Image (cartoon, rainbow over all chains, first blue to last red; front, side, top):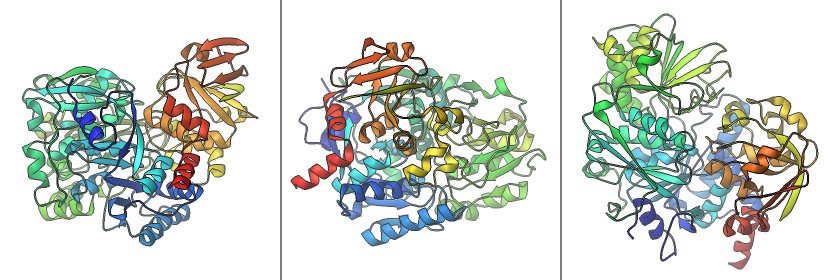
Length: 420
Length: 164
């Protein structure tokens, strides 16, 4: 019996001579990632383990992104601890003004290559499957162990194969592909599995859009969402990384837990209603819902592709008086590129507030927290109760076309109506 | 390992880590200081029931969402000795195992438990007892069982370092 991509990568990163779903193996990691929330707790756990030694400082990345720029003194202390520890241990550290949101950042900076294993103290570490890596979100104690030993324990997951076909519609994006999957299998439907995306429709998805797809894999309970490397991946990595890599593909006789189909021909822009990403509906089903805040940004949809889509919707128009629009370029590099391309000017002219890269408004931390009774349409990944502020607020998750359109209309609307 | 305590029932399915421990309190890294925010977005009154050794009784896909270890850290610091339920989200489950907080899948026992029920579990034998009535739990895989018996990932790491 052949292997899936996930099984092949895990086999190559363990001492096992065979792997199968459910089997627990120790897996070597190529990158260990943490942030200002999960890093400091990992350092405490390392102290309890009785060691201060990192397995390989060239494989460790620390990013200040959650409470950065520090929203209060307690947050400032955590960011300082992350920075001091990183400098002391000689590991990569991306400070404010030099980095951005960890997942978009480490992809952009060439840390992630196909076939590699990425672990991160953040559930959205699943994002890195977009480049054909095996990536896993872990807690801080796991990260402490990975920092010391360069490995983590892993129950080999099964694989759910998602075949994407058809022609992508004008306002349909990768976000709609993954919302379809989450709506179909449910918030726990991917537990103990990874998603693997194949089929002719995958070619229509740029790396930016694949990042959004893989980013929300965890919202179905899946460990990651893997796009086996193709020409798009190779072109993206050309000149971006000096790490050697080989594409990894599943064997034709690999065994799958389940097969799912996503047909672009039948896909329209979607939204996930509060308070669970599995509550997926078409935009038209909830059209007319008033929107008080729009956020374009986050580790799922803060790329140049997303900023272009949002800017296209608001160009020459004004953000509705009922609504505030907050745009968060995911990295400093994206911010500069958006400036150079005139997107920031377009957005500001329309009345959008531009934020420095941060996770703040997504997890209700700072810079974009919702009041009771407010509705938000955000390009983020979670709409749990209280996720982005008050438990009495509501968050709808959608793509950047849908978000930009809602900013102009002040309510949920089909992007085609705003574009015409 | 055999442990037990008084049942505290957390209602609902798909209970996410944001309601169990809201994001605004993530800038706390000391487990003792996390305790006042456990269940804050779900039902803060659940905290008052955490007296002495307790066993949390939970529903399907419990702990979905974030990797925030604040949830099981605050639970442990508040006297939670075990979590029994239908199923657990992946990261929450492994965080529990790493902290030697058994997360045991036993839907029938979770169904039978009421607030205040006396619950004991024998993870190795795969047994859960609710007010004296015995239930068979899904077997805890050998690796996870060894992790629990060693006291979690920190003692595991200490042992590995001592061997090296």
